[in-house]
Length: 106
Image 1 (cartoon, helix red, strand yellow):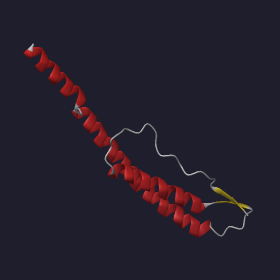
Image 2 (cartoon, rainbow, N blue to C red; image 1 turned 90 degrees about the horizontal axis):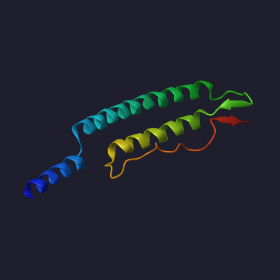
Image 3 (cartoon, rainbow, N blue to C red; image 1 turned 90 degrees about the vertical axis):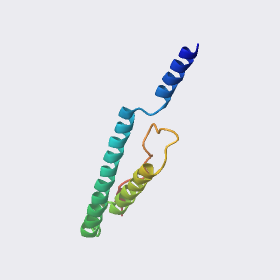
Image 4 (cartoon, rainbow, N blue to C red; image 1 turned 120 degrees about the vertical axis):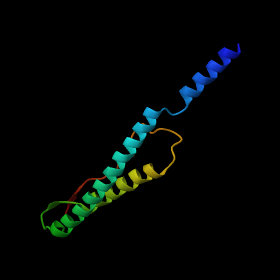
């Protein structure tokens, strides 16, 4: 009976504790998300430069760089918050984007 109890306790502990492969996968995922945050920094800066260059376009329909920059900043802040929070539950989906169009009509 004691041997069974010990075996059951060991099996339960092994199943409930994070396994090294899962921990390694989490570390890789977090590193890749951190790389995406850095890439979003670049995209935010690039979109800002494009807004300064093309923002005064007099075309009847033009690209809304301000909306793009706002969306990128929001997505970046949510990704960074994901990296900085402790997780009680796994999320099945990424954060929802802000609604709205990236075109402006004059």
